Length: 174
Image (cartoon, rainbow, N blue to C red; front, side, top):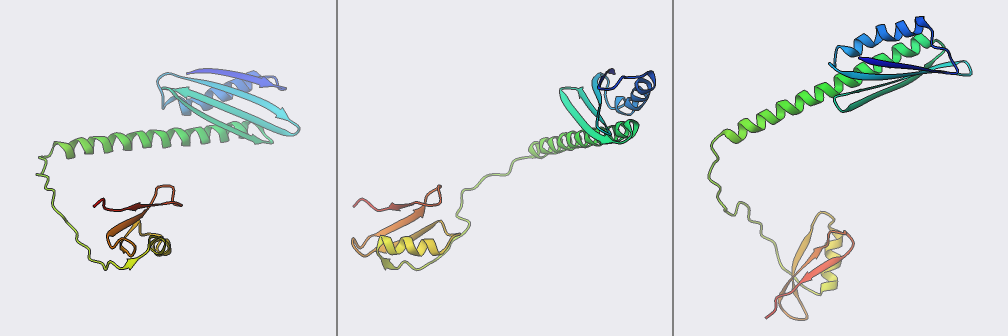
């Protein structure tokens, strides 16, 4: 693992350098080839450590502050290790799910039938399109309403448009 340590407002001593390298071994075990950028800085009485690890096209980042620089580095390592484990678990789960999908597809496909599976009956009442619109607005889960138009005597359907505010009216031609 390539590690670049930068100090801002703080000199990177050999002790800090060795400590960071020793702690980064916990991250190194997850990747064959990775790069790490470690930035340590002091703001007032706080010691801030920021660690970025990039490997396999992924970026992991942790920033913590503490009164002790070594404690801040330890917290960063814990955070990074958690992020990496979570990412690896997610990838493994996705791979497992995709192999299950392949197995499901490999099974013989059942014959598809296009049958009417559900029939609902309801009463069609004579009303004006405006009354039908008001009736449809009263029922937020209902998407359409069939009714007999009192003006024409024909069956019409009023439906909600995708915008959720406007309505469409379907009338027969003849």
